[in-house]
Each structure stands twice: as structure tokens, then as C-alpha cells.
Image 1 (cartoon, rainbow over the protein chains, first blue to last red):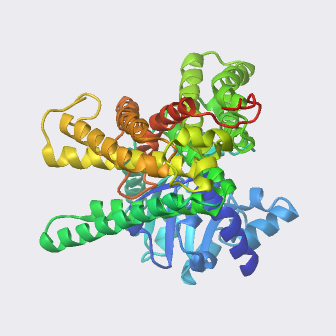
Image 2 (cartoon, one colour):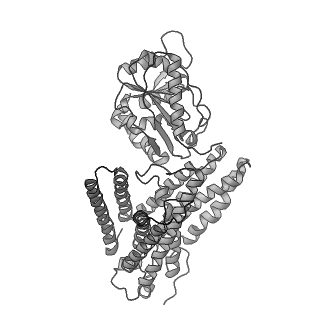
Length: 212
Length: 338
């Protein structure tokens, strides 16, 4: 990673955009982890989601935040590859299971290094401001790192500001609701039920206007 | 910006009042440590920040003051658009609506009164629906056109009056006549009354809010608009207006070109309009089913909760002052000699 360029980019571009152009309403900020290892799990509707989540932490923790992103999308051009890996610091994984090597291995390694992994279990940005079904890859991560806390975070607003397929950013406030962390429960179905249950409970905390 | 002495004293007085508020809060916390004072502490802390930003904006330069009001306008409009139901198809329309802010405040910078006063009510009003028509979606058209323009009128047009107040210039010749016997004000205050008028408007509007809240809390009694804003009482309303009128009569002649009687009327306008602006946004929030409009200012809710009164006081106070005196503005007829 290019530390100085990353720091400059986040301090001078990302923070002003997220704090002033968009604006954040964060509920339960005190629940956020003070350090790694930890997994942040959020619903996904916009490229801004990653930047919003990374802005929740102080700049000195920036180098330890690792968003998980699909390699077929973020590594497709040379510039995007450089930007995603060197500036944002993504962990690139294959969306489809590939032959050779475990696809989730880089995530496990990052957690073993004490980093904070950001994961969008829907696997795609999907329809604007709708939560799709959570893929169970997160359960595999939780099982392999049974003592690492998983923080459910509900996001709303970024999907209105910059939805999938749009290049024009239209300012809207972003709501960020941080949930209580949970750990591996010993059973995949129970874990997924617990996680999606907490996400729906967080989503229900807000009263959001219609967006149709 | 060159500030008249009276303006500097007024700003000093605001910070003195904040010191008193902080001291009172400190004593209250000591006397009754079991009560939860977080809300009060947050509110006062936010007041400190808002006053510091406002002071910096006014003191630094004319340009920073205009940018400051444009930024307030932007934050308020963004909060409004985030709260109301919006059609997905209208994303681009909202983008155009945001663009009215730099344009409107550019007219302020040019001191072009004629354009400033028609741009949002005429041009934006006619052109925003045109942008919507090109999208071709008629379902919900009226609601979208109506809600977008309502927001533009309050958050952009109304609030920009505070900025235009700032750039008003009085012709040196008519000043003596207007100011009458009031010769104690300096030359800067006489020909550039803007900063004094803006401080008068903003400080009294915010004080009016606080006074109505404090009178209401301490006296209680009959509710004034129970179905819109259940916390508001007649005692709070009348006490607040009386406090604002008293303060206006006291500092108007010293801070602005207005005399005692004109200042008293200005105080009444701010007191009454401030209340209406407040309950106007309360009615909006009731309709949308929300309590606080956001969490930007800890203890205050969002920015809308802070500028609600100003959306009414700024244009009404501006046009009162604009009617009282003759000002130099771009394109206006030359001032006839007295």
C-alpha cells in the first residue's frame, strides 16, 4: 500500500466528500471496534459505502482497514487495480470459487495480522436501497476466526447519492447504524440467522422516506 | 472585513452570554449531580461551535461570509432532500436544484438585487419542472415539483436574504438623513450597515428561539399549537417575543441604522416570524413522522432545527429594512440627492 498517498487521498478527498458533501448520521458510534482484528459487515448499495465505513475510524487506523472486493470488478484495468490495492487497500477475492487456493484465505490472513476487514455479504451493490440476501461466505470467515467479533452495520443514503450504474453524485445524508458485535455461534444457519436478524433490527431503527 | 465597533462589541457580548450559560450549566451540574445534564451540555457546546464559525465567517471577509451562508443553505437543503420522499427518477433534478445555491449566492456577491429576488421564485420555479418533464415520468409529478420548490424557497431563497443583508450599502449622502441624530456610529457602520444588520438578525433570531424555550420551560401553561408542536406554550411565545423586542429596542439603534421605534418593530417581526418559521418546520417533521431532522449539531438535532426560524426572519426582516432605507444595489436607479 502507498501509505502517504492513501493518507492524503483520505484526508483531502474522502473525508470532505463524506463529511460535507454527503454528511453522516452515525448511531451507536461507541460500539465500533477500537482495534483489530474485527469484521465489519454491511449492506451494500454504492461504491460510497466502503468510503463511508472507512471514514468512521481515525486516520491512524486507515492502513489497517481492509475492504473485501471482487477481483473481477476492481482489478479489471491497470489504474483501477493500482487505485483499489494501493490507495483503498482492498483484499481482492474471486466472486466465483476458483480452482487452486482457498478464496477466503487472504481474509483469514488479514485477520491474523490484526486488521479490520470490511465485508459486504450481499456480494453486489444490487437494487438501490434494498437489502439483498446475505451470502454465507461470511459464515466461513467467522468459523475460521471464531474469536473475531463481527459487527453488523446498516447503511442508508449512499445508495441514493451514488447508486449502481450512475456516475453523477447527488448529495444525500448517509445513515450509519452500528450494531452489537457477534461471534461464531458454532452453526452456519444459526450464525446467518443471527446476523440477518440483527441487520433487520438495525434497519428498523430508522424511519426512511420513500425512494421509489 | 472592517467591522464597526458596535458589531465587535455585539460579538463579544454573544461570547460573554455563552460564558454565562456555561457557568450556569456548571453550577446546575454541581447542585443536582443526579440529573442527566448531557443534553444541556451538548446544546451549549454546539452553541459555542456555531458562534465561533459564525464569528469567523463575519470577521474574515465579505467573501467568507457569503460562502458561509451558501454552505448553511446547502446543508439545510441536503437535510431537507434526505428527509422527504423523493422519486428515484428525480436524482438529476435534485442535482439541478443544488446548483441553484452557487448561482443564487453569486447574485449576492454581484449585489444584483433584481436577479437575486427573481432567480429562485421565477427562473428555478419554471426551469426545474422542465428538467422533470424531460425525464418523462408523470406519476408523482406535482408532488415532486411542489416539494422541490418548497425546499428551494425556504433553504435557498429565504436563507440567502441573510447574505444579501450583508452586502447592502448605503449611499453616503442619505446616511446622515437616515441615521438622524444617531451620529455615534462610525463611518463604516453608516455606509456598510451589513455586518451590523446580519448580527442583529441572526443573534436575535437564535436568542428568540432560546428565550421562547426558556420562558416556556419555566412558566408552562396553555399550549399554543398542540397538534403541530406540543412543547410550545403561550407563555413561551409571549415571553420570547417580549424578550426579543426588548433586546432589539436596546441594541438596534446602536448596531444598525434603525432608530429606537424602527428597532422595536424589527424585534417584533423577528419574534413573531421566528416562531412561525419554527412551527413551520415542526409541521413538516410531523407530516414526515420524525422528531429530529438529523444529528449534525449535538443536542440540537439537525441543521434544519437550527435554521427553521431564520427561514422566516431573514426575508421578512430584510424586506422591512429594504423598505426603510435607500440602498445602492447593482442596476438600481441612482439615488436622488436629498
